[in-house]
Length: 275
Image 1: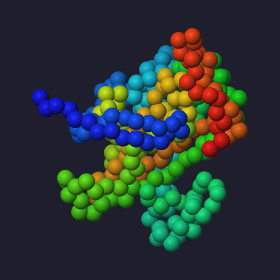
Image 2: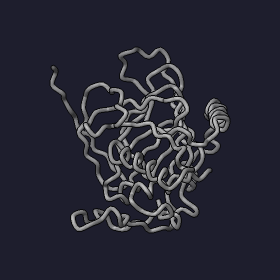
Image 3: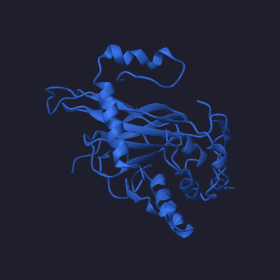
């Protein structure tokens, strides 16, 4: 059996510098435990059913920090309408897209060259952390929430063994959590707890959820804000629609009480949610 080899990446997250050992082996498919598929239907069930759902989310959040969700209640018609609008926009000439160039404004919206609806899932995250379902209500009355259209242009005539790609390099997400719709192109790769890249392939009818830096901080590092990356190495375009969910901008939050005890003091000071 060949010896596994590794390299190291260093990147800056909202919680400080991240150093990770990374296998040089090709990405592999995840196990069901590494990136599970979780049915959200019990979110409308009894308290016991919601606690059971929270337990599954807790396990996923403490492992890889990524999971798929079914029964997310976002209509397919809405998703397809949004995708159509994204394609219409990105198909315009560059001169038209640059009319709303985001770098020309202090507002975090507009068009970014290559390189909402509030989602009420925090109550389940609160249960997963051992708190009341309404624990985060006071800091999510007008939360920071950003929805994006992202277009990864295809690469015509790309060779199968080419290392040319269009994408986003290794990073973590800053906010509490991210909901992601991705088309059928693939390309999302997640760093496992065993330092191996996992292919988080699209699964019909699901969204991808991943923990962000802020929720890792509030969980006292129990939940994992995992390094991930996206590559498009095919002739066709890749489209995705991530939704980044945060807290009220003026809120100051600290490690939740259930994640602290005599053996596990808080690892982080209280922090403002202002970007």
